[in-house]
Length: 196
Image (cartoon, rainbow, N blue to C red; front, side):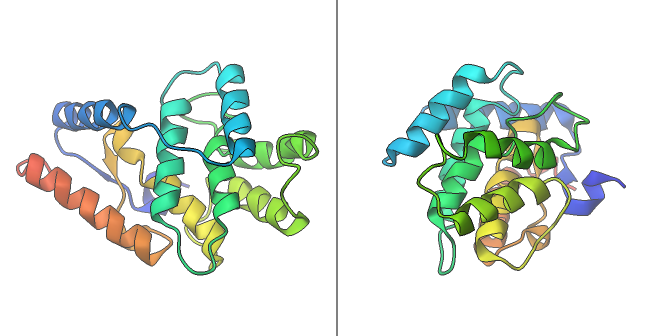
């Protein structure tokens, strides 16, 4: 199955302009580090930062952006604690930056090993939601669960880092659709001749 079709990602026509825009976005985002008020989330961030070896495409700067996107996606029924932890865990078990489609299920399984330490404050229900969000984020467009869907959109909204903009109607939440439309318009305004 073609993952580009599953989520409806739209590639920029001009890859050079797309990369330039992505780098501009990355530089501005690096200057806006998230303010993390939950000590457990900060400990988790530090843990994954120290253990990560694959580079930045799916590393700390991406995870910080997913964290910030998660804050923007807060709404009724969305468990903020789950979304914040998803930001730093969802890609942690990737084995390569391109083709590893099984990292979601792998990290969901691995999380059991940190359940009593880095995830000890989560209730059983929150832990299960976090596992499901991580397990499904590579294979599922939307679930209907507000927390899991907010996790999906928090991740997808950072696709600009690789020159891809998400298609708004393929986002899982209403806020995600709105934010994706805004990003799409920002790109179109910056590079009017390069969007499909």
